[in-house]
Length: 269
Image (cartoon, rainbow, N blue to C red; front, side):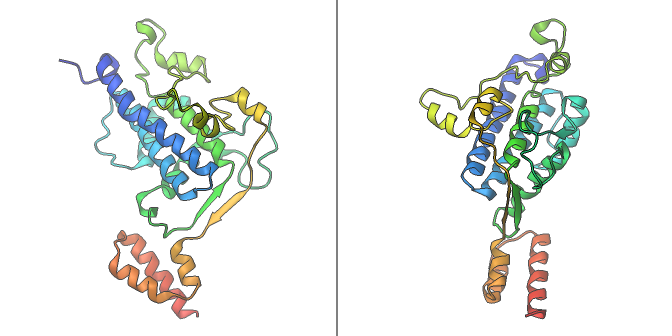
């Protein structure tokens, strides 16, 4: 009978890696595909899915149940931060070698927790029907890479001895801040090389630093996407919005928000 702690059982560690980390890797790849091809809503959705699974993997690997968290990425992040401490940095910094590319668009250094919260907000199920407007900085590609890199390397039992003898995983990771103990991802299979080069390795300063510097392609700027609700109201088609809120499901806070926006528009034609 296997013990329940992944720190003491190879089989449970393997299960967590396959079900959470490998699944998170695939969501992370899809988030990269989305932002590179201007699929902004899908970027936030896939990124949020990825972060949630990495964070659950961290908690499970370190003896913490995730049953009470649901899909609350922010609570998961706070719990993971308590476990990992300084292994999760406070701030996401720009890639080395491109100190000025941030320009005046967005913050040059964004707190790690702020980016996770922004992804969780725009990538939440309540935004899936595109009734919220979203803002995306093209530098969010690098922030996505950096958060995925930092969280992925922590899906290990940190207190367990590395290779069954001291030091433990935490000490190894502290000593080597750019180490991925398992560098390969499950989606890197034979026959996917072109797809991987075009979507995973392109401009990826966190996982492929040397290649990214050779690419010399760094995106900056800002995109804002108005919600379908907002654009419909702006066009004066309030009847369509009234029909939608009468026939489609929205969580109560979102429904109230739409009704209030509709009321404001009717009061100020």
